[in-house]
Image (cartoon, rainbow, N blue to C red; front, top):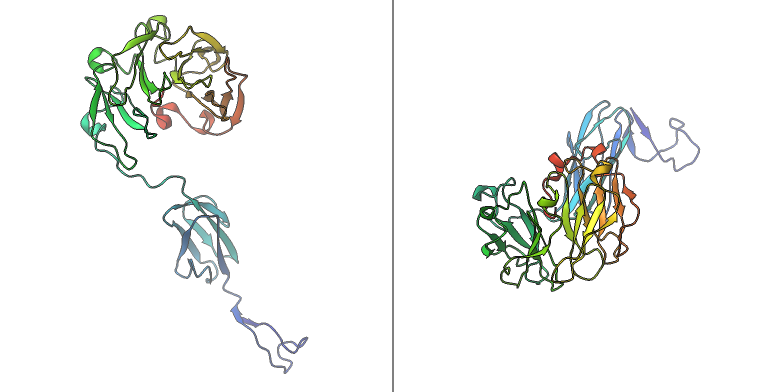
Length: 355
């Protein structure tokens, strides 16, 4: 069945003897229209064929035809989802029971596609999560984070050149498995504790916290900077998160421990860590914040130069801002990334490099 449109004579109908011009459509074939949205790029194609949008973004199909639309991102973009007759990010399946409209949204990619930067520090070379800590930090003050691996017989580094990591070399003979530094018992991380722009080694040990300063080409001998936050005082890996961050904006990373009844801090003075003091009564084990369920870390979330507390909780992400001498009250900053949405420590987080 057809219908003719556009009567130039005005008012006359089909069959009244007047000449009618216009387009002809088959009204028994509903039309599928595709639109693209967003600031990214991509194409949408159909099966059965007919749409290649791109250029051809609409097509008529026999009634009740099932049409599958596929979105393909262009380089540098990502497909973020369907709207209209479809939703989600998978293939869009439309049954042509009538005219349908679908919009595909493409956005610029936040990250480039992954590429291999090194063939070291990997499982094939024996670097298991259960035995060896690996993390990143700028150890030579060139503005690029480098690879650091706490290995069997020392600490190894591969420097970044901006497009790959160089050869692995040993920078220290300490903090390693052969000296008893096990993943199960002792936290090791990196941070700039003396404000020289180079990340140093920090180990939460049996009887204190030890530091090996970076000189840009290796790490100096270790020395004890604190007699707190250690295993002998009950700070176990299985119960208590410990990390480092600059909580008072002096350029030096400090010690932060999420304890039994609060969060404790020991400030760095550049040559040692001061006495520990309680900066918060939140994010602790007594309030149900367990290592096995909830990630806690630090970061400057409000751009004031001070690292704040961040906890990935049961029903959202909570923050306590640093004022330089303590942490303020906690408040919910997000209702995502939480346990109620399936974000479990065991399956989705892995082992955080700075814990």
